[in-house]
Each structure stands twice: as C-alpha cells, then as structure tokens.
Length: 159
Image 1 (cartoon, helix red, strand yellow):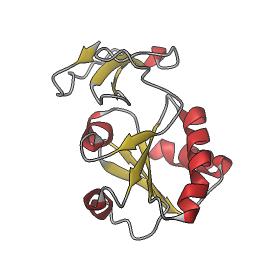
Image 2 (cartoon, helix red, strand yellow):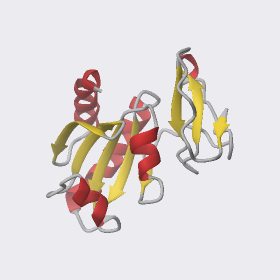
Image 3 (cartoon, rainbow, N blue to C red):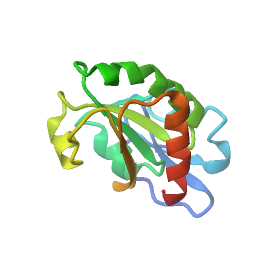
Image 4 (tube, rainbow, N blue to C red):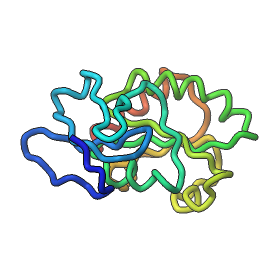
C-alpha cells in the first residue's frame, strides 16, 4: 500500500511500518513481518530495499529522516574527500547487510551544505544515525564494512 499524497500514512498497531521509497520517496506501509520479502513501492513499483545507500538531497531528506519508521544512517561526505571515497564501497556493503532493518543514505555536503550545517557536520566522513529526526548516534572517520555494521548494531537499541 502506498500513500501517493506525500503525507504520512496513519500509524497501524498491527506491525505496519512506514517505509520511504528509495526511488521516488513516496511513503509505503509494509508489514514488519514482510520487510525481508522484497516489498515494492506502491507508486513506482521499485524495490523498497535495493541493498544500497539512498542518495539524500533537499527534496527527499525529510521523508527519509522524519517520516519513515526505519532508522536512517547518513554518511555525510564530499567528492573531493579521499577518505570519503575510500569508505563508499564499505558503506554500500554495509547497506546490503543492514537492510531492511535500517536505511542507509549518502548526503553530499558540497551539494547540500544547509543539511550538513543543520546536523553540525564539521569533518567528513561523518555518520549520523537518526530515528524520526532525532539523533541516536554519531561517529567520524572512514571505516571498513565490519566497523560500520558493528557501530550501527551497537547504536540500534537506542533507536
């Protein structure tokens, strides 16, 4: 089921989660028990979990960060940053391991400086875990896949 109006579907006590589509950012209600069964977006029919990080920008950020029920791990990065580029394959590999429990997203601080400033990003790469817009955890510095996954797993109980 998809909400194509852009507003959040009503909460459901029967184990339904609101999940933002990685392609068109529409909100979809998905039974928690079916997250690992390759659910598709009700609007564009894209897979809701592609095993890769979502490119975040001003147009889709609020939907993923505030309206989705999934914790969001943001990699704040920039193209010119060597450690950021080195961490990209590790972050993508972590997305394959952590979805569908967590959404991973990449935010280019050069393209979206206002969002980087909003979260007080002073150095990159930096990762911030949000749940409904509330910061749960933060770390800085390039990491291998195993360290990213371990950091997320450690932070998840707080989400």
